[in-house]
Image (cartoon, helix red, strand yellow):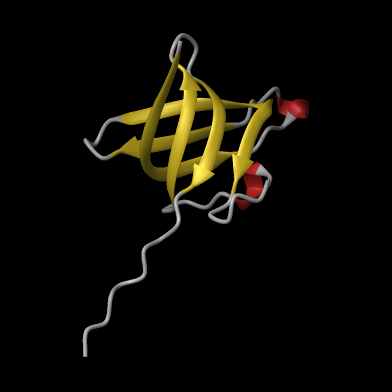
Length: 90
């Protein structure tokens, strides 16, 4: 069953096959709950302009919207949320 969350990236772990390390991303949602999600080759990752990017382009502190499988905490898609420019009033 797929679920969604919006939160801030706490950490990004790149896969390292030689050390049997799987790719992961840690996201803290708006309520302060932390989610450790596995990132597979099938996970789609997009920047804030909806362009496909690789996991190494995701940075700590970025706000993301994640669709994931709630049964195994596997990320299905990760999308960087566009930052809202502060409005300037004259």
